[in-house]
Length: 69
Image 1 (cartoon, one colour):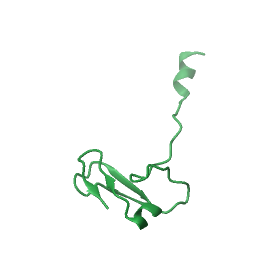
Image 2 (tube, one colour):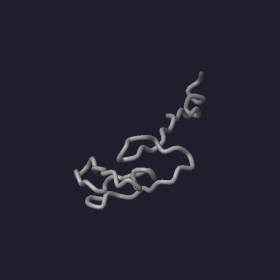
Image 3 (cartoon, rainbow, N blue to C red):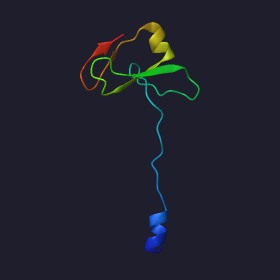
Image 4 (cartoon, rainbow, N blue to C red):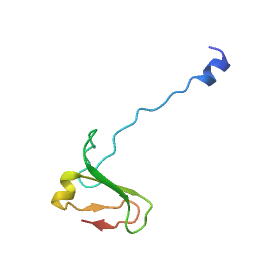
């Protein structure tokens, strides 16, 4: 392959579904959940599935250690 053709070919990594911050299970397409920045530091996006929100399962921010319900 010529170098001009190699530059036009774009290789992308497959995307992985987001994980629930509480149970670590992947979100399925169409599943209801919530995502928000960490209430303490705002650096990390916290994602919670419908089940963990309903049961009040705790989550921990990996950046600052904040624990929330």
